[in-house]
View 1 (cartoon, rainbow, N blue to C red):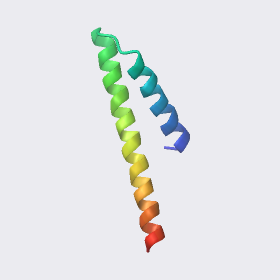
View 2 (cartoon, helix red, strand yellow):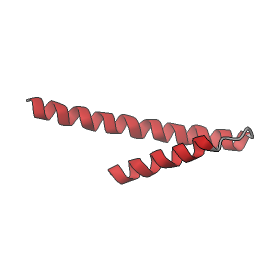
View 3 (spheres, one colour):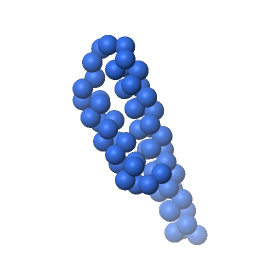
Length: 57
């Protein structure tokens, strides 16, 4: 997973978040996008923590 794919997933999530409607299908899709966004954020945090750990040692 590259930084660009994380960025595009995050921007897709933010775009979806701005246009949430209340029909079931879009809620399901928004939830899936949120899960992808969450995974991307956790992935970035893990990378940053690893870099910090390497620098400190």
